[in-house]
Amino acid sequence: MKKPVFDTSPPRGPADPVLGGISLVFPVYNESFIIEQTLRNYISEIQPRVTDLEVVVAEDGSTDDTKVVLERLAAELPIRLYCSNERKGYQQAVIDAVAHATKPWVFVVDSDYQFAAIDFWRLEPWRREYDVILGMKSPRKDPFYRVFLSWGYNCLLRWFFGVKYRDMDTGFRLIRREVLANLAPQVKYMSFFTAEFVVRAHYAGCKILEVPVPHYERKIGSTTIFFMSKLFVICLQQFIGLLKLRQELRGQKTTRTA
Ligand SMILES: Nc1nc2c(ncn2[C@@H]2O[C@H](COP(=O)(O)OP(=O)(O)O)[C@@H](O)[C@H]2O)c(=O)[nH]1
Ligand SMILES: [Mg+2]
Image (cartoon, rainbow, N blue to C red):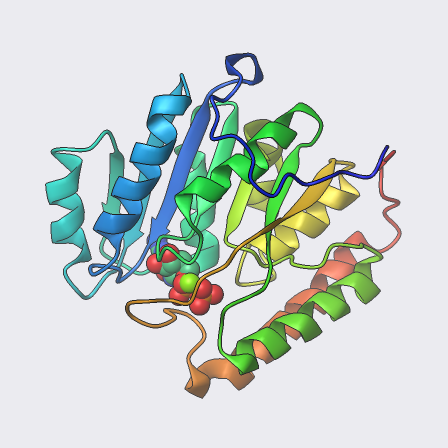
């Protein structure tokens, strides 16, 4: 396959309807200050240019005003809202959220607007050739310790699983729904879903592409996951998860052809 060339300012659609409709999926936890802006920006950017679009918003366990804001927005915007009271954690939240998607393609995006809606168009045209299209944060605008930990994590993933991807924990990804339906329910070892999903997709022979996308600082709130006080436990959990996944996949030859 020839090396992909990335357009630095791709046209803003329209998406080719032949490639199928798109489910836009947002996991949300404690984002009351930013979720309205995120939903309005994504819907106004994408809805006029995608013939068959649905928007799934999956919130659980928020302890701030997020539910109230979402209920108000659901009366106005074309969203399907799913709320539950117990926090699920990122991994289970994403698995449950994508199960609500019904279109042939699923665009799963973090709701804190660290990725801009317009950058959807950097990923969208690659649907012709790939099954999993990952927005590779370039450069990553997170605190130094996060950039460093993520670099180490990605190095370990490449080494353990013989993959070549550089940003396997991105929060901006466009995925063929049948791939998600097959593989998402199997994700269980690594808490942040995407890395384990990408490794499983690679071993299942999926065509995976990383496309550079701008990444922005979190303007409001702070990480809902990577608290300093929990970093050691999180790192340990990911490392144990990595070992378990390797154990499971050991001996399995990747079915990739490209
Ligand atoms: N539904 C749901 N969403 C979550 C949960 N934890 C995190 N999120 C969402 O997942 C996204 C990524 O979280 P974030 O704190 O921005 O992670 P970071 O960017 O890696 O620091 C955000 O949109 C959060 O609102 C959870 O337990 N349930
Ligand atoms: Mg974030």
